[in-house]
Length: 456
Image 1: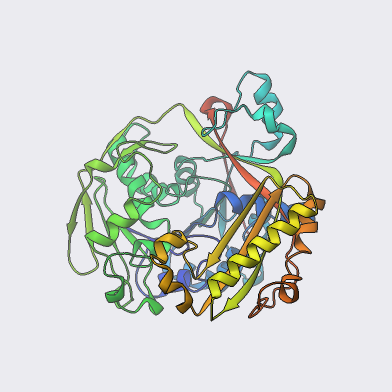
Image 2: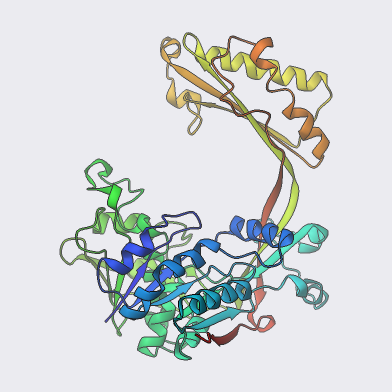
């Protein structure tokens, strides 16, 4: 049995969680998931300004903080913190090791970045059609910023086999971070579909950090203990593919069949066909059993052969946006906010400003589910203590969006009586980065594994 702890659900998650995963009990592997589609675009912007950037610097700081303990406890680390610059991340890690005089071996997993290969791929008749709209990539080719393939777990396992203490990757499937150690430790092969399916499901349970151990949980959320000290998920994996989801003893949160089911349903699409680079997992074959306090056992999981395709995450420029807001207080808070929205729109029309989209939300009066859901009768409306008017616009024309940003503040003195402009100043114009999902034959992609040793 091996113990795989996840200490990061996204870039921006708790800085202390990975430290606690290492210090509060025995683990064999620490995994850290930093990447989302928008994260790749943010990292690319950083690298465009500084060629040495483009990776999650928080990860390097974490390793600097933990390296002696990782060595002493013999914990190996796997992270997709390399983002769009895995080699830059590698260099920073090796420098940390040298400065602390602790020798380490870093494994890099690359080959996911196919940005520079897009024209060659398109010329071969591979259209990289949008999985949602079926449009060919050629329709937005001139606006593409990045293209990264979701690689699988076998390159991670190869890096571990070759002695890596820390494995750093670019874009790989989130759950592959957890399955990689299983493949390495248990010797699973590429056709062990049921075991691979179990490994991917284990990774799916852990990949979102504390969301898999009681955080963001709808089931009896008020009774979940000590979320201020929530324990992050740990997978106790066995060779036959069965595993237990748990957390460190004495930490807050909760691991029960009910809470685990919530995480299982997160972002899976068809539960009978959860498609990953290495296997198609059938979530309907999962058998769950409470195996003690904060322990849920998984067994009986079945899988199907992997497809011949990788998924590609392509980001591209899609215009500009800006968002502004004002707060209105009692009495008649919602009525004032609605009037301000109407006045603003009339002024935008009079200025001849036309947008691809304009959206209004009334925070405090049903922004999530609609005003009608929150306010069933007119009599309730006057009792709302405050409502925040939030208006956003989107356009391909940056100048038009910039003009919009100059129309929010005037509402303070030339509209309904306002409580506050919330001290936000003039809204900022932001570039919109859109997501283009596509499929690419695996034969077009070559994952690469390399090993690097510090000279400490």
